[in-house]
Image (cartoon, rainbow, N blue to C red; front, top):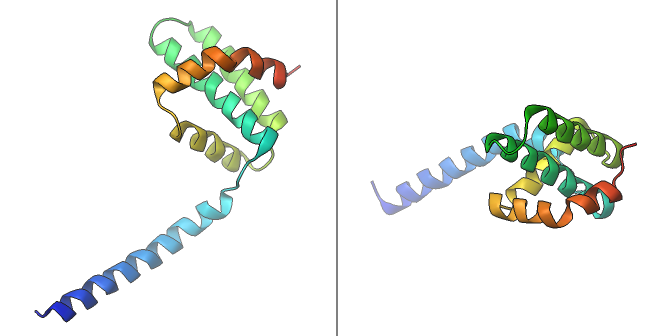
Length: 123
C-alpha cells in the first residue's frame, strides 16, 4: 500500500467519522445554549449547592434530608432563574461542573453559598 492510498484511507475515515458525529451530535448541539450574566451565575450557584450537598452526604457530613433540601433549593433556583428547556438547563449545570474540580467547588461553596442564596431567593 502506498503512502497516498494510506492517506486517502485516513481521509475517508475522518470524513465518515465527521458525518457520523454530525448526525449524532446535531440534536444535542441544537439543545445547547450559551448562558450569560445572571443565568450563568444562577447555574454556577445551582452546581455549587447540589454538588456540595451530594459530596457532603457521601462523606457522612450531611444527612439525606439536608441533602434533599439543598437539592430542592437548587431545583427551584434552576427553574426560577434560568431559561430554556430542562435539557438545556441540565447541560448548562454540567458545563459549569466540567470547569472545576472537587477542591475548587468546595472552596467556592464556602466562599459563595450565602451569596447564592441571597442573590437567587426561592421564596
